[in-house]
Image (tube, rainbow, N blue to C red):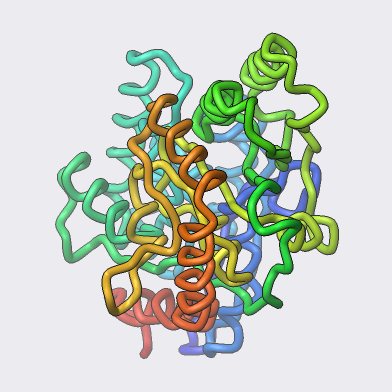
Length: 365
């Protein structure tokens, strides 16, 4: 195989990677690396494999097997962990002849919703896949540590390539206080039900909140959120808008005074940097890699408020602090706008990934 062929990267992503009806941080990351790696000298051949990942049916498993079988021996294959980690019986045999790199957005067992036995099964499947990989890429330092500790991986095999963010105009907001925005698929993992309960306790204060994100991934959670909104009489103030992308998502950020991220689990939290890129303060649950993503300024100040995870009273108290203190809001906006200038772009992500690929055995640098 020529050096040029060896430098190519075969990237395997979920089939919905370009579906605007189900946008996600993982899909955005996958799209950006497929478009950005060629500029680093790594040509990309992309394969989008449809399926109900990480638990695909027989047809999806067969499609993935056929896809991997078409890749020449010794080639570099970068596979989204959502596709790879649940099917070690398909992936591990191919890992013996390929240079397999698995990109983990969120460890499978950390997704909220499956019963404990099902979560343990997913974690065991993921462990088998990751132990067979040539290298593993995580999206935060927290996630890398989690994978090393949870799966017994060598720390030298797990690398970090944090998502970048595009520079964006400063968000004018609405009135500087009352317009709240939560961006993410409506799932148990993202915790919109917790936010509904917290906002209900602050119904005496002025606020409006948009829950922006796909409604198809977790119908039971969507139904629970709708019931909570109805039960608390918040329908006029709290909206489930469905997914927004492009200009419509940019407009939602532009109108926001505060981003709220009430997740129960999160490896990185790309919406945090999307908000900070616009100078929008963040109220986030201190879960997973979120505190790392939120960051601090040189004086140790955080561009937002951090609350304990899955704690409705603490989330409600944080909302009251934000809504009730003009001085706090002004301080947090100032820190968020300063943090905006310290954010890394996607070029840093591409450099990190290229460094991982260049260090694979037998790969030309």
